[in-house]
Length: 485
Image (cartoon, rainbow, N blue to C red; front, side, top):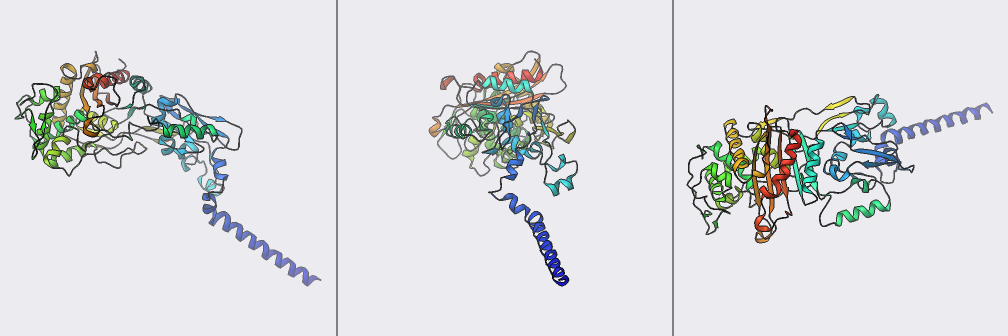
């Protein structure tokens, strides 16, 4: 009998060992495969068993979480959802995450290893701690001024602090409320279908994901290239610029909206936005010079993140002289996001140095302890400091006595450039109204804000649409908000 007991004991021990080996195989070596299996809902259930961390603007949360009591327990909530949607994006149980909700998901969901007090133990248990918070660089007043200024019209605003690259405002309209997509109900599915089929595209972030022909605002880049290359040395010297200007190698004649552009000096041509002068300047600089300057400002950069990806602005480097002339006045294949044009204005305001823009100041634990600090991003010299000083002078003239007088602010020095960009088949579309600018309070040591505004469906008649009339007042309100004026 004893022999049978020994055999049974050995067999049981063998079965136990096999069981332990199989458990180790499943729980350790194959855990990743099971965890990522589409049929495994444990990770999804665990993800929503605790509130997400918050996204903060001006020290106050603009997001939250509500306890539904359901299996996927916590749903995302948003405060002033349409106002901050281009920044927060959405966190949906059905449709995933976008923008900051996506780029900082590890911190917000609690999955980031930096949030774990005992990282090695958490790797074994696969537990997640409380979600952390994301502190943004946004200026609450500037964000509101931009949103109210657009007043629901299709368009976007981007504002940057020139010396640091901090993004102060990022607005896109028409917008939407991300809270509509938070849950997994039929209402969320219905909202998703409605928003995606809306011809106004309210979920499109026009500030960073839509590129437009920049029109005459691109003349800031062309002027920088001409000054750096020595094509223009004296702002007040007459240029040899015919009006109309025949595009090289073609019979096409380029004209201006107003008179007085023939042989106009760079100062007068910039003030009154003479197409003929800047088209010829671009040709005189040449493709290599224009391409190098545009790329220094950030055009053709596919790596820009703030921390979510920004659609690259483009300047075609393979053009003939006629195409270069049109590219130099912001037409042909030249396209830019509002954030890119805010970067152009910021580089001028910052003495020719461009700080990489960023939107996250820091991440913190729920109790406020800092995990990562944002800090200033790298910068690069876009143009000579002397060129930047001359461009500041030219942009100031535009606001003082040119096409941008609607952006003037008592108690501050403001520089700007208007733009009206043609588009559509045969340029038949309603032109886009642009304005780029920077501002420095009389008591400030340096410019405090650079802004770019684009309005797609401006309210004026086609012949009256201008960046100075439609976009400049919005930029003015944003700059006043930042300056406290």
